Length: 147
Image (cartoon, rainbow, N blue to C red; front, side, top):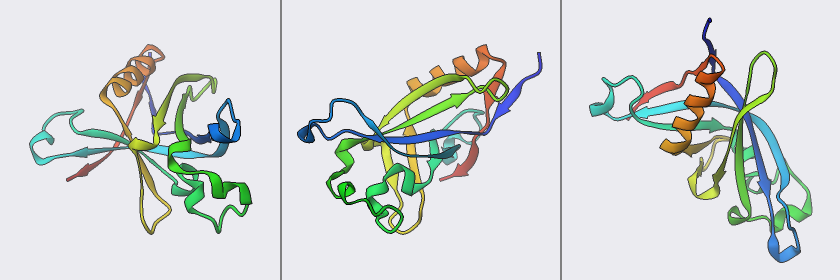
């Protein structure tokens, strides 16, 4: 069967402030994401070498840092430790979720002046994602950056 390449996927940010009595994470924002693979010089010959990241909108990853976009007062109480990001990979034909992964705020880097953030995808999740996509006849493609 023909392989379909996945280049874009869903990104959402969630928060829970336990001190405020929240038991479940609640949605902060939604957006889109794409893969970026950062290769070091020594890894440039390998097909899948280098660290895998999701490039996302900074205002979705960390809305509390974009107060001009979001004016709700309660957002003043949200700090990075209250948040997590989620990536959902949907089948391009059925739109069913094939693979989801939660990414801690520890693995999120928000640019200081641009509306841009990067979420580090660890090797175990990258391998799980690749297996899930392959089982559906899909593969992903990352933008390659040399570092």
